[in-house]
Image (cartoon, rainbow over all chains, first blue to last red; front, top):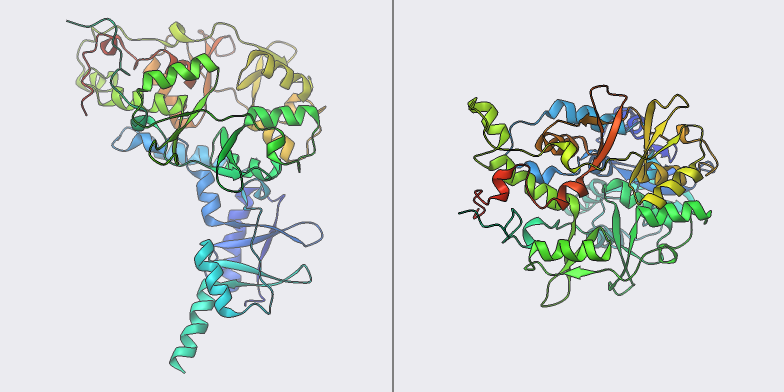
Length: 148
Length: 296
């Protein structure tokens, strides 16, 4: 588990969240693909991933374009970026989050990640966030055991 | 010889136009959480299923707007406000028949099931049909886009926006309340409404998406229209070619454009992707005379 983690609030505008992802990456020295979202009482209310943000940025009718070459890509990116100002993290986050406790067995965590297709799991202790487990932590931990 | 009963959609089936990604949520999901799915996937409605995965209803932005209007707590389960039952068609059904069902039932989407196992495999809404038409137009040898490139004299009569737009523009004032906005939207069955100032100058638009977000953000339904409207108003000229207007909508992710005459402030109509789908053709008379080859 990493007990060093960054959080966002549901009221953070999405464009601001993108900046905070960048900042968190710098501070933690690792790539950050998802962050926990908390309310005013610091309770976990959701998770937001880079994927959620990209989904929201994706224009609606992409499937139509396929072979078209007369598209103003720059203009469309600008348009998508403009929309990220009025939409908040709480609007596009995943609200129903699976959590674990510090006591959850590592193989149980592995099982959850595989079955539920998630790469990070918040760790809660008495409803308070204690940390987060990334799939890479899991992999490294298993790897260490194999090489010992 | 051009056959008169044919149009661009003849011979096409639902499977060619439908969207494969269908967002489904269980009936006890809260309205608040359903809004997240609608916003993130940029869809106007989602399929509601029971815990066993059986489709039981459809939750649209219109239903959510109704809940906002009625002052329902946003933590209510979506089954309280969904429309039911969902209506279905099969991938091999003729697209024209599917459109006919949508028109006669006054609905905006059908879900597509595999006739062998009844699994939901897709969804079909007006923008999907427009998308398909747009692709054909784009690839057609009579395409206005291609004609421009070749600099040939253009002898084909093409549809312009004014021929298919709705001629009246309903509007509310920017100091009207959101409740009034919602009343107008449901009375006229529009997806969005124009907002004007007291000098009758258009200053923004409120769509159902804006209202759904206002509900989610806890904005009081008595708040003024101007607090949630999007501006500027996206518009096109009345004489613009339908093809260009559709392109504008598809690429700027809007479902409708307001239509102006010579002056941009003088709005004379409104035109949506659904209107474009209803004219049953691409965007020029080349399609109507069935000169377009559809065996792609």
